[in-house]
Length: 378
Image 1 (cartoon, rainbow, N blue to C red):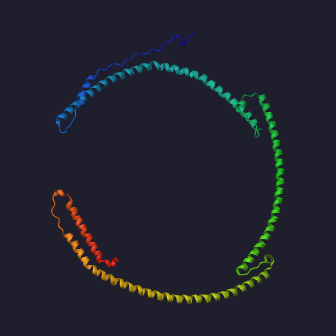
Image 2 (cartoon, helix red, strand yellow):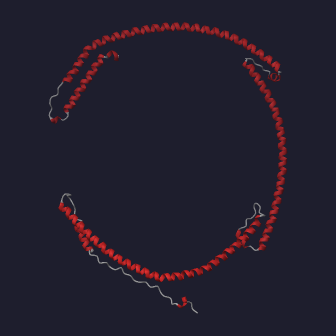
Image 3 (cartoon, one colour):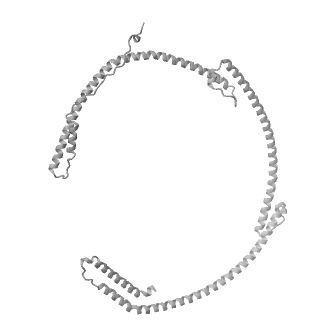
């Protein structure tokens, strides 16, 4: 018995030819070209020329009417096309919706097969992972550094006999490794014990040596302190061993004798210093008197010389007064020069000459004033 699919003859997909209908607009491209040629030549060269403005505005109104009319025709045509398209879509959905319902049912039935296959795959993978985990844990329990790593895929594909043989070999290798590690640890413990004993012996020897060194340093420090104490008092003691072995009472006697000798030397030095200070003071007072007299004589000489220079300068300034008066007269004469009226052709010659005369008069006046102040400049 044939199924409905087998009984139904196959049909080829049909395509419906469709031609976009031509819309009859009121204006042709030829007319638009003529309007463009005519109206694009219109310009307004004078914004107050009413005739130019009216011509441009009339052309604009006509263009707007033509554009709006064509837009209305186009919109009417589009509305008709849109309605026809909606009718075609409605017919299409009346046919495709029932077929889509059948298609969804068939896909749901096929989904059962796919779901069963996926469940079977998940179950097989779960068993595989369980084998990998169990065998991996067993292998990990007898792992040791440097042992060969086994991939999960290898654990999953090998037979149980092969795995048990592999596990037995690994356990034997692990035992050999552990025995070797235990022997190495015992050897290390023995070496550590020997090293500890040697370190203790060396530490004891170092303590004894350091104790002797401390006694030697303490004796040397005592000698250095006593030598420094005597040196600070101006005394020397060359027998260092005697200083180091000297009892405290004897050392105090030696120290006291040195202090007494220093006090005597200091007293004598102080007396000598006082004598020298008094002598230097008397010499300084005598030198101060001599310097004061020299300064007084020098001041008197400078005062006389200043009076002589001032008198000479006064005589010279008095002698220059006629020259100063003459130069001031020249300056006034230059200021009094009146320029004649010049023609416009002379340009700015007048102001330039006037400025030149004023500048010359000012320079002569300044030079004359310097003659009058010659005593200050000198």
